[in-house]
Each structure stands twice: as C-alpha cells, then as structure tokens.
Image 1 (cartoon, one colour):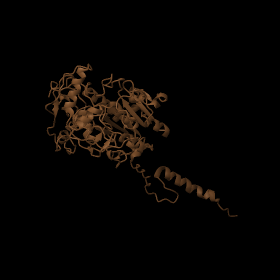
Image 2 (image 1 turned 30 degrees about the horizontal axis):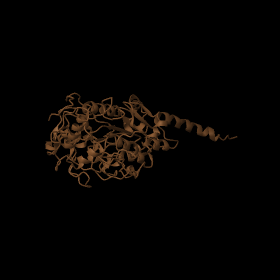
Image 3 (image 1 turned 90 degrees about the vertical axis):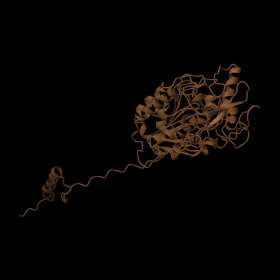
Image 4 (image 1 turned 180 degrees about the vertical axis):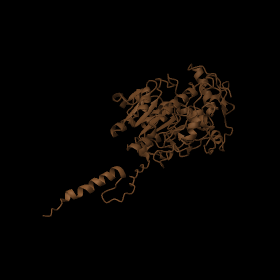
Length: 475
C-alpha cells in the first residue's frame, strides 16, 4: 500500500533549509533569489518651522542707544568681509561726524557743538531718558511739533539735567555740558556684542516702545502697555501680563532674577503667582539639564524708588561698567549654546530704552495700546503713546537665526511678545503687540537643524580694558 507523505513533513526540509539560508546567507524568503536585502530608507527629517523653537528667552539690559553701542558695526562688518548694510549715523553707510550743541552751565543757553567721540571710560555719570527730556532730544527747538525729528537735543538736555541735579542736591555731576551723551563704543570695547550682532541676526529699526524712562518701557516688555504710567507708579496696576496669558494657555514660564525686586512685581497678577520667579542660578541648571520652560525672562533686578542701576551692577546702566555687563551677557549665551537646550531655543537680548545717548534715527509712529492716555502733569510735553522711543541694540541668538542678518523693518520690542503669541497660539495683550511683526524674518528654517546647529566659538568679551570713571568722559 502506497503511503502518501504528509504535506507538513514534505515542506519541513524546505523550511529548515530556508531558515539556514536566512541565518547564514541572508535568504529573503522561501522563493527569494538570494539578492542583497533592500535597506529600510531613513525617514527624512521633518522640515523646520517656527514650531521648531520650543524655548524663547528674553533678556533685557539698561539704557543704551543703537548708535551709542552699534554705531561702528559697519566698520566691523567690513573688517570681516560682510556687507555694510547697517544704518549708522550720517548720510552714508559709514560713520560721519555728527554733533549737537552742548549746555553752557554759566548762561543756561546752548554752548558750542559737541561732536560724537569714542568713549574712554566703561562708565559714565547718569543721563535722563524721562518723558520731557526724550521729546526735547527728538527736536530741541520745537519738541511739540509733530513729525519733525532733527534728533538734535542730546548734549544740551543731558548737560541741563546734570546742572539741575547738582543744583537740587540729587548728586554732584562733573559733566555739565552733556558731552557724555555723544560718546560711543566700538568693537575693541565690546568685542562679544560686535561678533554676535554680526554673525547672528540684529536690527537697525528696533525701538523702545515709549519715549520715557525704564519703568514704562519694562512694563511694555511684559504687558504691551504701561496703562498710562510714564514714571514708576506708586502702586501696583492690573494690566494683563504675558505671564497671565501664558498661564491661561498652559505655557510654562519663569523669571530668572539676578538681583531683587523684579518689574513683574508692579503688576497685581504677581501677588498670587510668585513661584515662577527663581534665582538666576536656576537658569544655568535648567539650561544644562534641558529643562528650560517654554518662555523665560532674565532680569538683573531693580532698586525700588529710583531704578538707577541695580545692586548687581550687571545691567549696563551708565553708572555701571559696560564691559562687566557684556561679560555677563556672554555667560548667559555661552551656557545656552553649549547645552542640550541650544537645539530648539532662541535668546533675544535688547535694552529697555536709549538712556539719553545719541541716535540719529527718528522715532516711529506706533499704536496706542489700549486707549489710555499718559498720566501727564501741566509741565509735561503732550503725547498719546503713538510715538516710539529711541532705537536700542538687539541680537537674536538661535540655531535658527539667519547668518549675518540685519532687519530694516520698523518695530518696537513688543514684537518679542508677538513672537511668543504667534509661536504658542496666545491672543495679543493689546493693540500694540497685535500691530507688531512676529519676528519670523529673523529666522532661517530651510534646514531641520538651522544654520547655527553648531554654534560659533564667539569672541570673548574683554573686561577692564577701559577704566570706570564717572566724571567728564575723555575723547
């Protein structure tokens, strides 16, 4: 009797043979031809976009105008082979002489012209950037005339401020002519800033929001309004801050504080939301561990009542050392660039207002944020929050920053709030931030990792190459 083999037994040798081939010769299957395996394609990296930025860090220093700090950027850019496309003082793209008439403390009238000069000190006596002084610096002869800004009042205004302060016992000033207002620094004094502004992205049309002193401008930095305040308020006020908006949207945030008395404390929202304010040391821990919140503010603190610099002396206020402040800024950026947090972060550094130092570019027309008018006295120059302050320096530091980029788009620094709002889907706080560009022009998302995936080895900031003398600046 003929026995028919079981199908299972018949197939078993073939299966075993194929298993052996697969193990030792790369068999592709029972009926495979033995050819080399087809590699699994590597998935393409997703395209970059604004959503590639997961951490936005805002860092603000004190009282420096654009021409005062960055008026020599074209000279530096030319020395490293970059286009000289920064709007510095004078009619051409290279520094030309500029001067404003100083103050004569004997007659109380205009004195001889004072020309711009290279500062020989890392410090200077204080200057005023208050409401009236700022408007007179825009137009010394006719500061109430709308739309005409010869930018000619700097030296006289600051000389007059020094003389008045001395007379009223608010300090003893040596520079009563206002010469210090016409001083500038260059790449030899601030090598770190010149390197970073030229390699990463910057702007020559970046303005403070208000022609006034530190406090109202800092309020715009957090709330896109000062709710009428042009001087430090005597009480807290209830403007909605970006912090409240982020809490509502579920966006994480911290304020890293190097000193004391954050400007956040001027807002009533801070009374019940204080735990997000942490020491600056936590910033370095969070950067190193990759645990930064989605939005960070870095502050050096403020002395209550006057705001003339901070106890930390790191804020670059005129009575503090600019090289010490620049070295502090370098430390913050370097920690970020050398950390796992770098790959998806942006650090925006800027200044709260021009500080009384000269600049040749007129203010821009802006939107009143909320219809609230300035709280003015009968002695104050009229205004309605539709005129910006002065140009201030700024740098956008990120792996996605465009290389060597200079923006010429007019905006005030509430554009940084617009960036946060655009990235994280938050409604605008006021009409001011709503009217600003969202800053996407500063970024290059053409590659998944950005043009600065590997950050540059920056030129270090030198310290103590200039003396810190408070008296009449030499130049």
